[in-house]
Image (tube, rainbow over all chains, first blue to last red; front, side):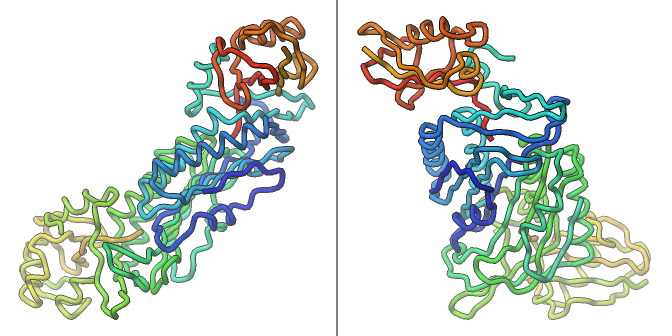
Length: 153
Length: 153
Length: 80
Length: 80
């Protein structure tokens, strides 16, 4: 198991290597990358900040949960902080397992839980020079956070 | 969209690069690798063969289906043939999408359909020098093939 | 009429060949080809109803063949 | 007793600070700290019921605080 909050570019190969073993037949890697357009606005970059000590702790807990779910210790995640350009990788999750179903499930679990529980925030920088803190959207599975927050956008 | 049957090592980075674009926020990569133990027998390597022209055709069809499912052209797959050692990658699937749910679904679709429909076979080589054609197992989701084949193991 | 039969993996081992030209009656089906091939090899290793592709498309047992068709007997696939 | 309040992202912007030491009554809860902080900043930008962590663990509004606790007001998280 491996989890880290980093301030340097993420190397997806090194994340894969952390989980690869001869007993595993399947590796699932998820990469989150900075999109050039979000909610119709052209983005030039994103700045990630965190409640760093808690983020590291929650991330580590999520990896332990995913490992228990998959019955495998071969779960790794890295989240990057700081200024990222369009196309750069903000998060990488890798899970290896003898069988692919478990690898897919555990990788999905890590990214969904990360997005709901890890105290990390991002501020998008737009072409017009403005910047704005991003609220979670319901494009994927963030409804949970909106509900907990008692508000929603 | 990209699909290929190859006889050289698979470079997962090049597969990721084929689908990465600034409009995508999520990349899912699946790697199938040769396991050192299968059904309790110690494996030294695997030999993959195919009905090559049909395999290429079916693989291409599956990629088109996954692209339609995900509403994205950023779907790529490579399957290797020949002799592979333990730990080597036999198949790589990459899907990129603005949103992660679709990327996960499409990547899963490609590998499941590949395992059910693409005419590729593998012969495992064991420590004791014997070799055997591998029948699909039901560890994951190959029940479909067993059913179609009217037999099962 | 003549059709080409392709055999792969365990089926090729069972018959001892990977490609055969066979003569079949006009109007012959996939089923007829399977029966023909099972007599050539170790029939216990060739199932009565294998998956079959005709000209690279999966086909049913009663699919009617034409001269020159490529009929592939497809063992349980195991890619990935 | 004194607790440390941590503010992040939009909440730090709303209050103009990222860390505050505040005095609260013995037996004060998370809710009391939130009310205190909302008076310091632009309350319209600080919700009445934000997510809160006490000593790095998510906590409910009626969680009772102890001296020296680190109380973090957590804006909607947006990692990934």
